[in-house]
Image (cartoon, rainbow over all chains, first blue to last red; front, side, top):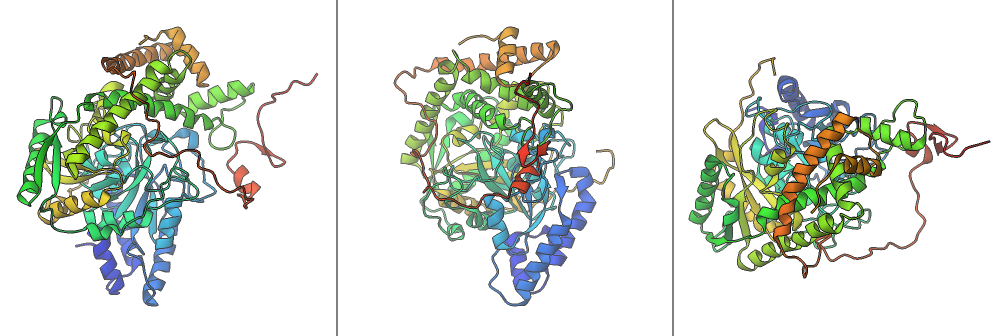
Length: 492
Length: 98
């Protein structure tokens, strides 16, 4: 086995035992990048020089016998929506083509304190708006399991690089499913913690009442380790919540005896691929055989969640993206005639089509005469969606559903119809609107070899229940150990 | 709920500081109409007595002590500006000089 194939916790043991060095590990990952990145195209920027410096620093710590964190020397990739000091951060948009942040996001400061090795910045849908990573202004990322299919989105690059072993783990962001859905489609673990668990200082904002940062990893143990590094109240983000952060590795218990798992009927209706439904049902049966009680529940407002999401998220985006006007950073149109004309030309040329569509939708929903009918209405229905979950968690500890209604689809298959693309998010947006923590773990493969994800949700701040169920599942299954064979054809 | 016209799209584009040619305006009008039609399903629900959720945690008016702290150096802040002069961001002239 090559070093790039291991998990972070396995590599930590090797680093600590001085069997390997962080520099060797980093070089192994960059060799893997040379081998498969031309096909996968998961990265927008590679930071090899920084990575080798950081690896070297970690090695000195290990050599000196210092107390080293579980992520010291571990190669990690960062979604290009997270500000990295002195490293270009584009949000996969032309409007930020030349943006070099003068500061680090809080999550980056925390990761650097752990001594991680930053491999590079990953591709995404522009400003995190999309479900396939096809909205990137720079490149299409290919799903390592089938290079003709999409990796999911918006954090498609971060999911693909973990699946392709071109990073040991990565960070993404999830507004309506942008971590969980690509994790499912790429066959890796992806977790969105509770809204407010992780500081968003330095995360370029999309929809502020929904955005949350989270990890992609190869297994649930690594997920707990990265969460430990990221969570906690931050003075720089007033929406981060001051609740105690447990040691999430304490939840890695191979026992779910007596836990109650709810299965909502509304997630198993028309539109759900039958093979996906079968795999998820098998996973639920597996959890039952491991000692959990399975309880049928109802989340009656699920069918309204796409409609509310596609008002609330674009409305907030239209306000957040007002800052991109060609004055302080990023692209500016050539030879502007006047100030208003400069704003308009800069924004119209700098933003891609989907971003403009969402700004338009959001501006409309907030405009005079329509705000009550659209934005306020959506906020009220959001309350109903949240109440459904509140009632469900009176009965059950964890909810199990498919993560995505289908496996990865072909590149280009859904780009012509924005509404069809929005419906990809049907399984993930409800939990986002209720602020719940959620994970996607691999739970099998459909006949053509594409991975399927099981989504597990819990009440706010109950990440420990999710990790315990997901860990038990992985201790008793082997889907997460499967690796894609990435073909070497040059025509992708 | 209302439907959207090309005039409506042009009005919203101006509010959003975007501009489109005729073909783009037509495309956006059709796409937005279809999306808004789908969103119209929210009207199936009676919500008069339902409070809106803007945020899932009960947080209100978080304040910090009013203490002066070191901010980013001016040069670092201006480094990304398309145009900067004498420590300021540069923009096209906004005040007419006779």
